[in-house]
Amino acid sequence: MRPITRWLRARADDVAVALLALMFTSFLVQIISRYVFNDPLGWTLEACLTTWLWLVFWGSAFVLDDRDHIKFDVLYVSVSSGMRRAFSIASATAIVFAMAASFPATWDYITFYKIKSSAIIGIRLDIVFGIYAVFAIAIIVRYGVRAWRLIRGARMEDLDGEPRS
Image 1 (tube, rainbow, N blue to C red):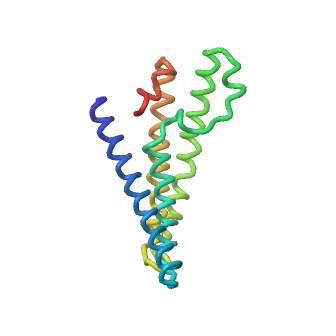
Image 2: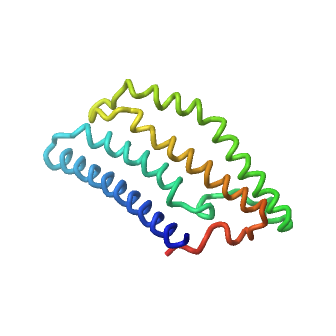
């Protein structure tokens, strides 16, 4: 399973790189059109905002590991390893339940936006905001698996996988 996981992670990284490249290219086009040709383009701002939204949620869902997120762990690091396991199980379970509970309303909101399009480019807003549904499902699965593995006795050090290069 490790080679498949590594291949999928590499493809997720590729998507993040492509989104960042699109955002940066749009940004450069805007600078050139505004300051060289004195003719600002509206679509570049919309493209930057949309790719940024996608990049943040895609990256959080598929590129970043749990150890890459900022944590407030003053209490966590001061307790025993058994208590850390309990904290980790409780927090993973809470994340799963919160995301799952919010998902139906989130899905309704996203699908409602199929009737609207972005102002300049004309992308349907359900497509623009649909990345949040992908993010929510990925987080539910990730933390559900994390809680399950912790309950089954997995070492906490092994849960985030091998260091990424």
